[in-house]
Image 1 (cartoon, rainbow, N blue to C red):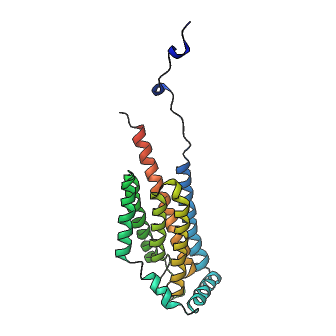
Image 2 (cartoon, rainbow, N blue to C red):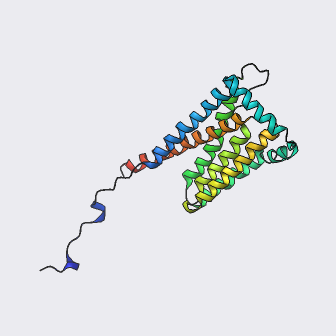
Image 3 (cartoon, one colour):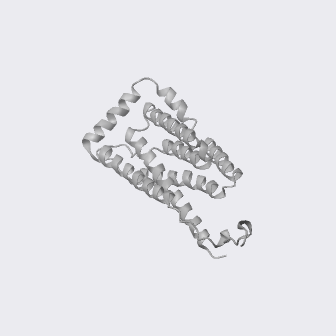
Length: 219
């Protein structure tokens, strides 16, 4: 009788690989859809629709009239090219320190990609019955929101919840500041968040597809 300890075992390498549910890809696709719908909805309901446009303007006028314009401008002065560049370098450095080069690339792609989309929309969309240029989406809110999302992507899993709460808070402050300063309407702020969510979904989905392709590549 063969002792149990001496019984032959099946090597772990020969065991069939476990199938994982591509939850990250599903979440990325949902982010793309939700973000895109947010941008489209903001433009259609608050810019093209006369009633929504009037309400949008009224909210901005109310925010501008609270007498905190200088405070709003002070907050927005913090969002400049040097500050954003430094933040991107720090976030990419955190990702590299954790051995996540893909996340470092994702930080740069997210911040630059979201801003490119925002500027393209701002230049391409029109505001009916107005001599003003189109202000949707907000470039400042796009920068702040994209940096906040990048922070969530690079920190360890245990810190993602507090990082996410901090990102939402700072984005909210930036959004209110743009309205208090008279730079943007609520729809501009909401559309900027939609751009960042959709861009984040694209970056996440591309990263997941590339990682899956590398795993399937024969040795």
